[in-house]
Image (cartoon, rainbow, N blue to C red):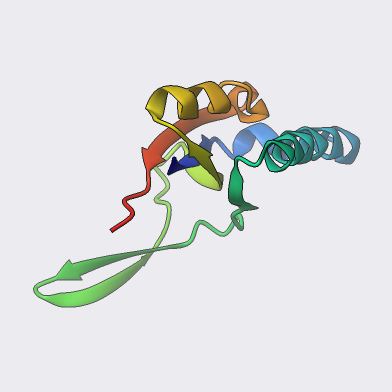
Length: 115
């Protein structure tokens, strides 16, 4: 069994116009899906990321440089993640295919290297 990260990319503009009631319904979908993963023993962890965009660290002439992110031209941000246990990419993809996030964005699936 391997661990896979399901990285939830979305356009934050999609959520700005939702009423508080609509947003609560969306949040409940994610919570219910996460609870079903927990019950099946597949959930390793999950979190929503803060909406501030984070930071990007790069080197510039060998010196670390911190930038605010994401940049204005970026249309999608990582809004959160789920870490799940699955036998292989096929099974991880099958698990992700029932995620409510597909109604709002894209899911990137990456296997965690267990070195």
